[in-house]
Length: 332
Ligand code: VTB
Ligand code: MG
Ligand code: MG
Image (cartoon, rainbow, N blue to C red; front, side):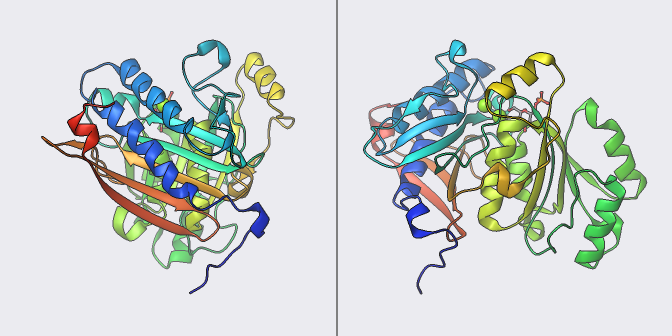
């Protein structure tokens, strides 16, 4: 069967890059996993960043980091504006979270991943490192079923109606933070259940895409903005709905965002504005989790599990890999 192309052919990212992204997140995950459970978040994060940068620079792309680990002065992290790739290829935007869930990794708790997205240049929201208010559901609902600005009760009731269940049967996932206390008590007052997670809301959003398996219908709450763009990229490939709004709580954050091109500080971004072009998203498990298995170190083989999404065709692949040379030569 021929591919269903939803983006103009000349706007498509070369699909061969799908596998290249897998290589990048695999190596970042293996490097971080070597420091799993050591209680050192910074060291694990740095290991993932170094591996990701090295692999990105091998790719035939003319890439710019639009979502990274901070600003130029905070080097040696992958910084916003950093150029990556060998320049022999398309101009692309890159969003990275080399180690999403650093605390989970440092404590060897479930759910840390290495994740990145690549899209045609100029199509990923260059989200500054701020908080973002988010709401997301999976595919199969009528357009506009969720509304970031509506009371949570309305969102849950509408979702229940569309799904053909009672409101208390809608399961919501929320980051376990004091800032969500009111949201949590209002949902519980409806008799509905909430899954609280300590970190990892990229996977949290993705869980809504597969409610039968994950038990999650809805994601809401305030998390980090970069994670919002990465999650939107993945959800676009599967076809859910998501909205986000950047939170500006300081003058400095407004100045910084303005320098990155943000003009409307109250803008509600739709999923297709967070990631608008042909996008590829890859994530490899670092610790075992609900979305992905983590890195396993055998005597002669290291195994990884990666999920890779491509929006042009809505393809989702899971790639289970065995790495022999990494194990044999103790490469990072
Ligand atoms: C969330 C979570 C991430 O940051 O986005 C969170 O999903 C938001 O920040 O895994 P706070 O921890 O300050 O609430 C992470 O925990 C780390 O990137
Ligand atoms: Mg993160
Ligand atoms: Mg991170």
